[in-house]
Length: 441
Image (cartoon, rainbow, N blue to C red; front, side, top):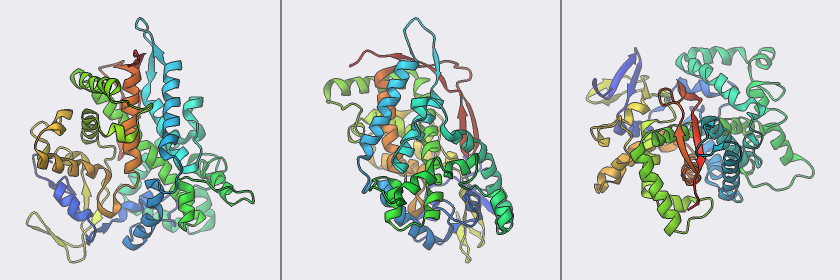
């Protein structure tokens, strides 16, 4: 993209852009661009739209309004303490089962444990109880394996939207609907997640005769009028989106930090200084972490260097068409977004492929502000921006600080540190490290 320009044609009626300003214009409130048929592939049931698949702007805004309070933590009791409890249990598990002494060589798949952590956090916040993946050191309900299996299918369906159209047609017939669409009666796959042991059971608890008031995202959805069917599909979307992308962001940023001695040393010094002089809580609180400039720079740089999503997320040009960079774009043209290209924009300087947190600490206030606006596009923009941005940010702040507060972390295989495959959403495995308990500061 940097050689040929910021807009490229990838099909007869399909464009791709890495231009931050154009991305913001297309996604902004009041834009006449609408979600394209690409989003149809993101429906669990072809006949039930969800927050990420709804293409009608009015219906999407209604869903967003009903769901935003839950993600913002309004009415949810002790969101941060609930996250803290799970994080501390995760740290204890690493120390008890996976840390080694200086003379030992004991490795741990930290990537898998990060996945367990993000699943436990999002299930606690959404359902009022975690899956306890960390506690049992297992992929409960085969949740992660199901996501891994489903992402390639979703990519194919979004690449060829005709497949989603065929699926919608076939599933209007009840026998085929039962065969092809996940349901609470299934013994595996996403149906198992919707099923008796997970989402359905959590919802049932809210309608029983002895139902007590809950304070979680599920309760917030119900309080704001979402139907039971809608709540089921939204919760599954929330569990997948709230765990997978956050896990990718943590793993990718951690890998960049621990394979860069200068960055690792600078971050470690900031953490140690804060512990010695700033009265940091255990675990660190979100507001405290946001006061640590180098930690924030590492997080921003991690999201920039490895955006956790690489999906097209196409929008369709309005019927009257548009002009982009002086050229007319006919109505009905689909425009996708190259998030990785966007995060290599010239605003970041002449070394955008290098992980360098210091770029965020320069004195040029206007430039840093523009860089942050560009980096924030990782989470979307305007009325379709990710609702879980605040939760993800809190997790990132806490995980990096607490992990490096408690352990020295070294990569096991510098030649092949992990296995990472991109299906629009990343599938990552075998991020193996050695962790050694640090002397408490």
